[in-house]
Length: 78
Picture 1: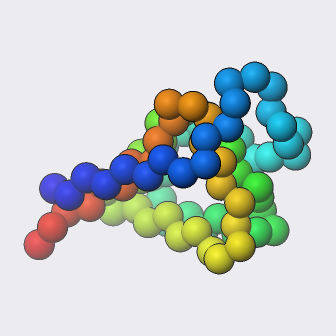
Picture 2: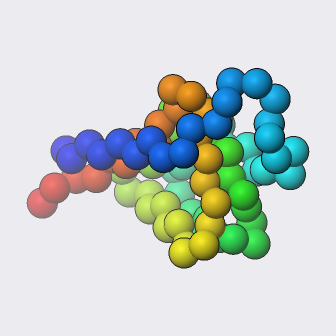
Picture 3: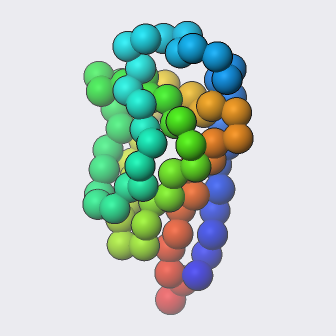
């Protein structure tokens, strides 16, 4: 298996700086697309894109991570 981790812009541990942000706090188990219209997105904890699922982040989409949160992508290498 190949393990990749992404930790982009870190958000403060205090209250949300953008109350309209879409909170992401569960694993991604099916093909999902994040776009500018659906965001911004705030990753609240470590979230895994499970094997067999794909997360597509479209250009211009705002994704912010709480301190210590990560996005982990698990893919099989054939």
